[in-house]
Image 1: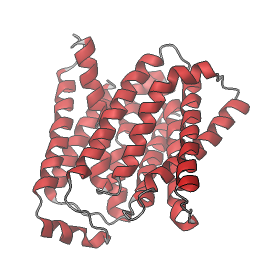
Image 2: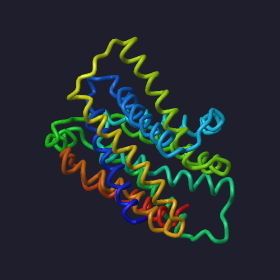
Image 3: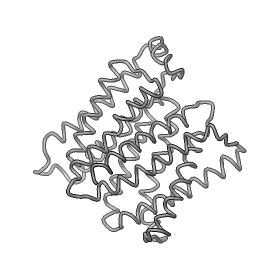
Length: 303
């Protein structure tokens, strides 16, 4: 079943990318990222209730408090990622965000050192991701504005040349990497399912805080047609997380499931091309292919 769990996680997370982009791309709604956090918080809260009251997963304030630093890094990275979706194409954002695995590898190498069993191809993979991300930055910065506008006409959604467009997904990447690195340490003392519930309950609390701010203080109204993609993305996000855990629980096949799941940014690029009509230049695709190659190699090696 590990294979099907991995494929479902891949499709779910790429679907989350697509619907989150649709829900957050309107630059006129400056609270769209907070509304997205509200949606994810609600859906994850409902799933956490199922895990606790139906499946009997253990949870306590001690577990929530212990896992809080990890939860905070993950939630902050996602909120910033949602903010960034209004400034840049999903085709570019998703591969950059998925580069967090390379950062984790660098952090591991810096703290643990290069082990004798570490294949040289791992260093090549990290280099590919770094080169690809830097390359995307250069392509974005140097692209002619007229060519950019002509390229974006098909999607009827234009993005101005901006350093923020690249910086925000890079910040997501760094925060997610720190969260993943901290996760690997904290989970040495916590049960995975309990930690996951702690994360979801923390996300629910943050979602409630955002709701109080957006709906109560800023008096924003929720329009069903505009919010539907956000909640669809939140459902896909939670489904992906659920099947991700079960896919990696089969430790004998982690070397196969990890690269399948980590390549969901490839599907995100495909969906953005089909459904959002995003069209990139050959230089964009070359840089993205470099990033994706490194991500998949890291997934295969399961660093």
